[in-house]
Image (cartoon, rainbow, N blue to C red):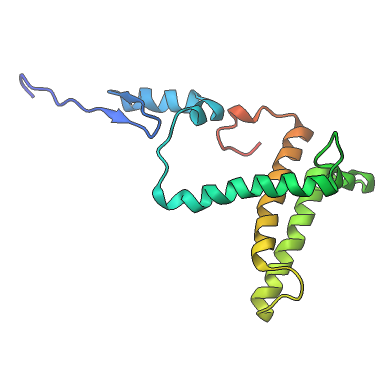
Length: 151
């Protein structure tokens, strides 16, 4: 090209613009998860219900921990699996698996006797998050830098 250069600008969902895609990649991968979350990422309109359910999952946990937790430990009931030699995060996964089995029953039989499928699905979401918290605590990992990679 003589006299004219093609100028490209690269940007991310984080609102960062740079001329060099490699520099942009290096910047994005060097940011911790919390730094990326601090940036306002546009939310897709079809994700509204998803985020509504995330909020409900937190509220469900808060309600249930009043019955199952202790004043100093909202995960006391799940953590009690350690009394049987089972790590707490695995205990949460076992409880989650019970809910999955309930949904498998629904899938094969077409009905459930006691708990609604929606309740089981919400419980699965909460148990998954509890398992993550307990896993992080057990391995004392700094998850703010995990970047979505397995710990």
